[in-house]
Image 1 (spheres, helix red, strand yellow):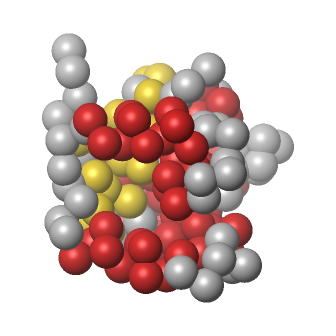
Image 2 (image 1 turned 135 degrees about the horizontal axis):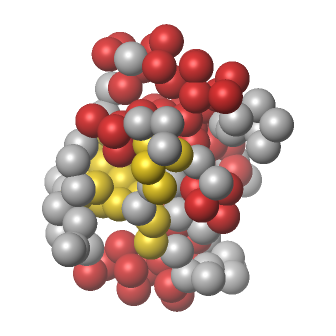
Length: 139
């Protein structure tokens, strides 16, 4: 069954914006063919902008994605801060970032969603304690 909604992690957004990134072509092709809006969260945006801090145009490029309705932000920390932080505690040995925990928690809230990522840690994480996280990744 195809995913109804796609949650976007840091890696594909960085690669989309940075043409020199090794995953740029995959990210551009993959994100370009998915139904919009793509969903992300504030923690992912923080990571993206930090990683692209040397690209003065990066904030504007992200802004354009929002203005065109291609990307929306899901406010998970407003609704489920304890749940997000509990996931980080559960996976502290991985370790799990705030962005990853936020996306896993969002995937629990949005039925039939898939996380678009470059991060193989999502193969370890579980939704609702025991269900695999649906992912779309290049390798």
